[in-house]
Image 1 (cartoon, rainbow, N blue to C red):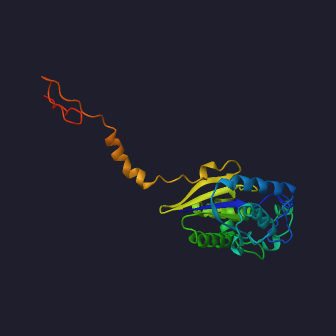
Image 2: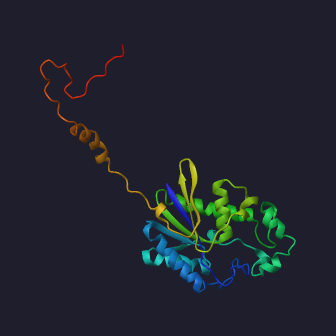
Image 3: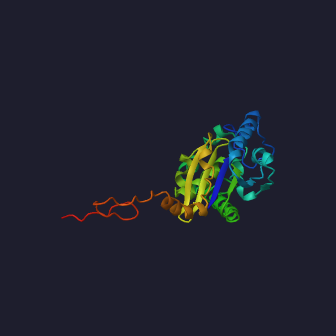
Amino acid sequence: MTILLLIRHGANDWVHGRLAGWTPGVHLNDEGRGQAAATAARLALLPIEAIYASPLERTVETAQAIAGPRGLPLRLVEGLGEVKYGEWQGAELKELYKHELWPGVQFYPSGTRFPGGETLGEAQVRMVTTLDALRAQHPKGIIAVVSHADIIKLAVAYYVGMHIDLFQRLEISPCSVTALAFTRMGPRLLIYNDTGSLEQLKPKPEEPKEAEQAQPDAEQAAQPDAAPPNEGAPDTPHNGVEEPVAAP
């Protein structure tokens, strides 16, 4: 069973102000660096075997904070990158709110294309295809993926069976962790947009098979020895337990 951790990058000066997209040179600010360090500490109890990230600076810096203390290599994957917003990239959000396509992005994303960019449906297919390929390489481990809010929302919507036109109802906070387990019965959402303790994701140690096999013998050995029957008393089985009496 693969457990996939989807982690959003930390805060930067473009959050809530401009649509950064694939704009180069958008780095974590002081708040974001603190968030990344705190996320690395929260993840310390988990046996992560591989860390992947979008190639953009803000995701790389967040992932480095997680990979560094573990001595793990950081693997950059273009398919994990942000939605390609086309002509909207770098624009101020307050101006985009007035754009004629804004209602479509919010309520009909399956049929809305960013000018000169991709549709959110295309971005979802790209992200899910990439994630499926990565988890196939780790069929029994925990892997971490550092990416962006919209693309993580699109992946979560797909795996939980939410129609893409409803994905804007989801929220992904900076440096939040969302965990999905991929079982034989399909994906299971373990935690969502979490910024607290991750203790519940720590793998439970498996009970040794020898202990399971020895348990019946131990229980049998714990049975008290049968006392010799008293004279005149009804016979009892040697295990000290009377046979049930049939109802008259």
